[in-house]
Image 1 (cartoon, rainbow, N blue to C red):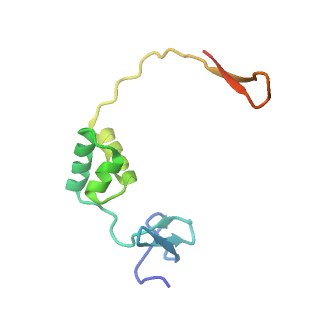
Image 2 (cartoon, rainbow, N blue to C red):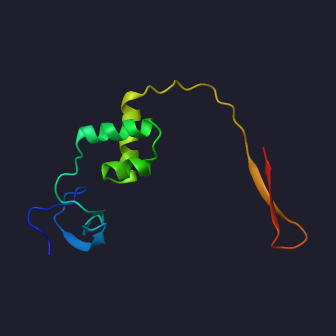
Length: 121
């Protein structure tokens, strides 16, 4: 059963199916692009909540702690912090980089299940 006037947020298709329950919310799946989502209406979180999340993370709280305080998910907090950094923080110009090549091998000591990793830079 598909609710009226609902569509996939990714491709816009109206071919949706119920796909279970996640965190107490109905999970939907698009038949066309197979995208899974929980909300049929607006996905926007208020801007003050996003700013609060970025500020709390800036003060040293973890993504999980900020998400718990604001009643959202750690993935959302991560996305808001990354978008803030992309928008507001200047990226340094690229400089000449020193290239270091790493290589690893493993070697057995005395018996086959006693592996030792050797790193070479």
